[in-house]
Length: 360
Ligand SMILES: Cc1cc2nc3c(=O)[nH]c(=O)nc-3n(C[C@H](O)[C@H](O)[C@H](O)COP(=O)(O)OP(=O)(O)OC[C@H]3O[C@@H](n4cnc5c(N)ncnc54)[C@H](O)[C@@H]3O)c2cc1C
Image (tube, rainbow, N blue to C red; front, side):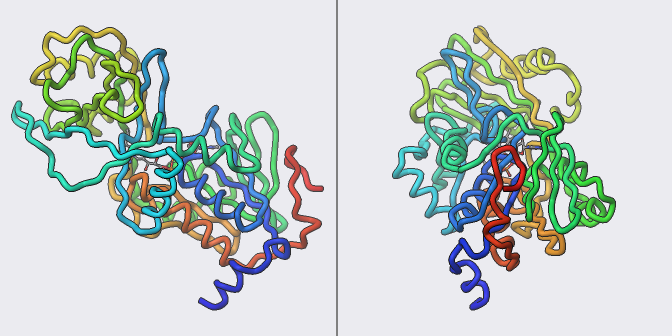
C-alpha cells in the first residue's frame, strides 16, 4: 500500500507515461481522465464519430432517442461520488418514471426502491463532457492493430496513421480485443482470459407513435414475446415532449435476426410493439432500428480489469465488472490503477507525444 501511495502521489513530471486508450466509452474515458489528472500523456482513439459507445443518443429532429443504455443505478461508493458530482454539474438527473413489468398480458408495478439516473439532455452527455475535457481524443480513428515491440506499443489505424505509446488500455467489447493484437503471444494470453465470455446482441427500435404505447406507464420490462424493454423517451428529464419510444428486443430475437437489415428488424419489432396491451391501434409516424452486436455480457467477469504487466497492457470494459454503466466506470478506474501501480518511468523529455502521433 505504501509503495502504491508513493507511486500515485509522486510528482507526475518525474514519471510521465504515454498511454493510448482504445475506445471512448465510459470505461476508456474514465481511465483516460484519471491518468491525465496524474500528469500522463494520454491519447484516446475511437472508431466512431463521437464518444459514448453504448451510452448513446440518436437525434432525428425533432425527436431524440437513447437507444443504448436506458438508465443507470449507483451502488458502489466510488461511483456514487461521481454521480453526485455529475448531478451538481447538471449532467445527470434522477428518472422517476412509472416502470412496470409486462407478463401474461398485464402490467404490474416493478419493485420500488431503486434510484435510477439518466444523463441529460441525452445518455451520451456524460461521455461527451468527459471527452471534451481530455487533452487528446481522436475520433474516426479505428485501431487495426496494436503491436508491442522494442518496449513500446505501436498502434495502426486503417488510413495508415499510427501512434506510439508506453502503455495501452483496450476498452472495447471483448470480441473486439483479440483481433487488435496480431502478435500470437499476446492474443493467446488475452483469449485465455476471455474464454467463455459471450456478448448478447440487441436490436433497438426507435419509433414515434400518434399515442402512448403504454396507457398508464412510462416504461416496462417485457417478459413475453420478442421485446424485453419498452420506454417512453418523453418521460425522461430534459427530453422533448414527443411520443418517441425505444423498444429493445430480447437476446433470443436479436440473435435469430442478427443479420437482417435495419428495415426488416424495424418491421419485426413494430409488429411486436402493436401486440402490447394498449398499442394495437397506434399509428407509426417514424421508425428506425439499430443493431448492437455486442450489447451485454451474458456472464460478466468479476475482475474489474485485466492486466498484462509484462506488456503494460490493461483491458477494461463493463464486461469485466457487471455489464452495466456502473461496471464500465469501475473497470475504467481499475485499469488506471493498474497502470499507475506498474511503476513504469520514462524521462520527461522523451515522453511528449505530439498530435500527429510522433515523438518530440
Ligand atoms: C441496448 C443496451 C441497453 C443497455 N441498458 C443498460 C441499462 O439500462 N443500464 C446500464 O447500466 N447499462 C446498460 N447497458 C450497458 C451500458 O451501455 C454499458 O455497460 C456501458 O455503456 C459500456 O461502456 P464501455 O466503455 O465498457 O463500452 P462501450 O460503450 O462499448 O465503449 C467501447 C468503445 O470502443 C470503441 N471501439 C471498438 N473497437 C474499436 C477500435 N478498433 N478502435 C477504436 N475504437 C474502438 C467503440 O466504438 C466504443 O465507443 C445497455 C447496453 C445496451 C447496448
